[in-house]
Length: 346
Image 1: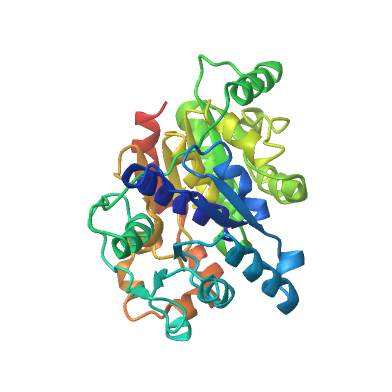
Image 2: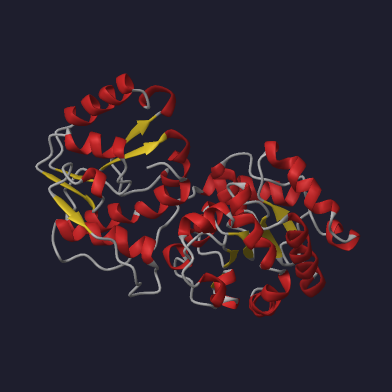
């Protein structure tokens, strides 16, 4: 319920449930900042908004528990599976409470499932494990569904006007660049990202727009300063999504999204826009390589090129040492796969 990519990915459960139970009423409990990725979703009947400023305290959490209990749910499916969501689920009054097996929440649910560790479809583990929870209701659900975003015609028209007004040529290749990750530990090193941008422009002469928010502009400018002048000439920095909905609408007009793996990549996939994503070393690629087929959607991870480095490596150690591992992941590893992707999406 907390991260944008997680909220978007979990929205597949609503489509699956409505298909099997068309008369069911389905509510979604989410953090307020994630709301844009499920706006206009026709399968969600009501939102319950978790505001960290109001509901993270003990008093606020009790208020949220009362809010949920008042809805008189028959079934609660807890995909988040953390202490606070377990507390809400346990006291929800629902006869069925379904989640994942975690030692610290074992008494909160009526049915618990151990997450899969090996994917059975190209959808990836993040999708398959969410769908696994529905087997607590019945066995008729598919193993996978693809997340979708629902843009309005007005949003698309506005985005097209923004692109037109800023000189974008729709007859030429246009890439959205995920230049920064959600944190430093999930961001490809700045000098390496500059090299990736240089390579993209040298290979394609494409138009580039950047996914960033105003507070990140200084970091974006640092990367662009490391780029070749020719590369900077292909970047239109005046175009950026001023909110998530505008970012989605702008992305829908792009030839592809290229950059750091994260929520932006998941949104592009949900818009059916091709993606090339660079995974952080501490992330298990199998978890989040959603519908990566090596053609339309490509993900690259240091483990793909130097698997011997990851033998007997603990996830906690990888997380602590993520940035130094990133420096091993040089652009030279990535270029061959990136070239194949650019050749297909140019």
